[in-house]
Length: 274
Image (tube, rainbow, N blue to C red):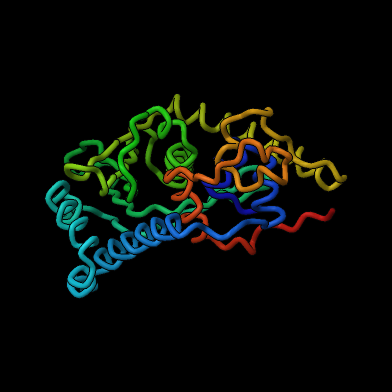
């Protein structure tokens, strides 16, 4: 089974919602507002990817005032990213990596990965930087993003699949829609965090294996406690007999995870016999 950060977040947040979404592939159409926000996010990601490939973007931003504003503001806030250091050894947009843990293939897609030699000619420790574009405002709660599986998994996979030590890896989120100017949140890494993430990941995947085995025997995945705020934004509230709580609102952060998961091939998810 191939898993992404969005699927891990959902599995940890509500196992029953994971079952409905990924095993049974149930869902409902996005609202016009949700669709528009996802569209803007996708267009900005494609714009940044095209620029990184050296393809012309002038016609794209000229025809789209919103993209032009975001790009102009981002170029002013982070010129070092758009005007890269030529000494960088590796730089790639939409960089994909996979890592097998237990019976699962974990997949990450970095919006931009910039990596130098682990040690430069001067012997100074170099850094591998993971960059991620967000088209929603910067979250007030840094702790929420620090504990999110996107941060945990992206850092963990790069440390496991490269020669870089955890201390040489960082991840920076850029929020291009912030009010005054684009803002960023940077997360550094270390070996203690790496070991802790590995333990947490293995526990969650072991739980998933157990739940899948029970699911094959006709037992559904666990639900969150009745009255949980998670049900407020869940499209499956009625199916789970939680219809008294459903409001239909979806947080921008969750929308972003859904959009990223669309980049992965859901057909690779192993079918589970009922």
